Image 1 (cartoon, rainbow, N blue to C red):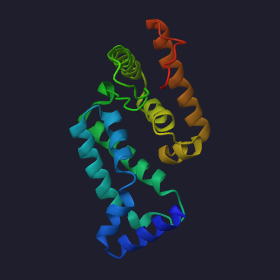
Image 2 (cartoon, one colour):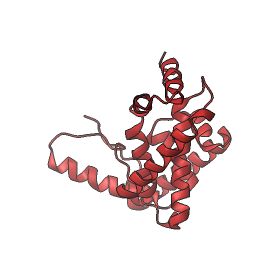
Image 3 (spheres, rainbow, N blue to C red):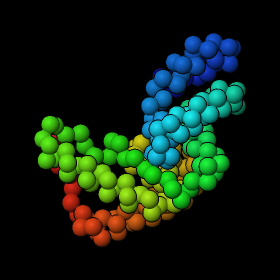
Image 4 (cartoon, one colour):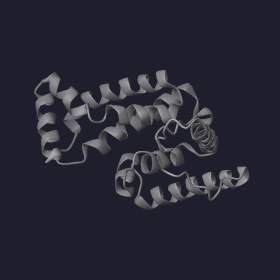
Length: 190
């Protein structure tokens, strides 16, 4: 049912109904910004990337195939805009990841909050050892909850490639955790 309303909104935008463009993107804005932020490590750069991606989404909306997964399509555009931005800035080696949302939200217990902050910093540090493709796959699958098929569609890769890059990313992160003594520890939710 949502896919149909997305298709209807796309049709309205193509007929110059600009308010429908906002309605079409509203459910995805925060996720797109989070992805760009995790890839750039800088909120202002992420906003710039998202602005560029939104312009491209609007400009190429007529190329979107009715009935296809709109979310995957806009994530692909945003990810490609991020890569373009990073190439222009020559920052591939300096990508800093933010894993907002990876750790569970906890109550006001200061000790637990400190432990979660330390673990989050170690996760972010371990992500610096991933290639851009591994980071993208890891963020889409484990960060955004995309399926292997959706991730392969966004990245324009085969599902085998997605699984391979995800496996490598997880192995590298696990190895980093083993080095610092966090392997096998799980955070208790609640």
